[in-house]
Length: 135
Image (tube, rainbow, N blue to C red; front, side, top):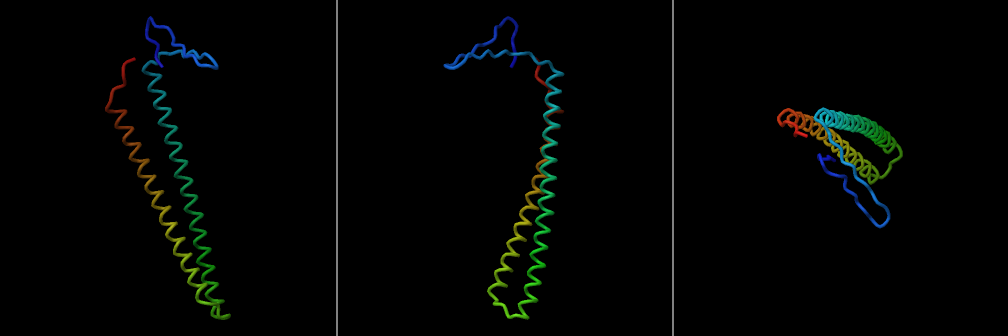
């Protein structure tokens, strides 16, 4: 909010309380610092998201390995104890679904990273190309 010279603060009234909005002037350096702080915070959030996607993809990979080991073990035991083929088909279907989910998450992570990189480039272009408004 910006207070212009010679003006008084606006008073907003409601049924419950009266609120006085004081507008303050923001000089160019404060504006640039706020913009820079917001940009740094955005980068921290995007980095945090990327780290969490990495962790999630690692966990899904481990889960996928567990399912593969279980399917192999189950297949070995099935030949010994003659387990129905229906159960094997279900395990194969489950294994394929997990692979599909893992691929989807990896694609989402890649997309988030490219968006992050493109977003950072766009912000840099905007910052460098447009002069800040005069206050």
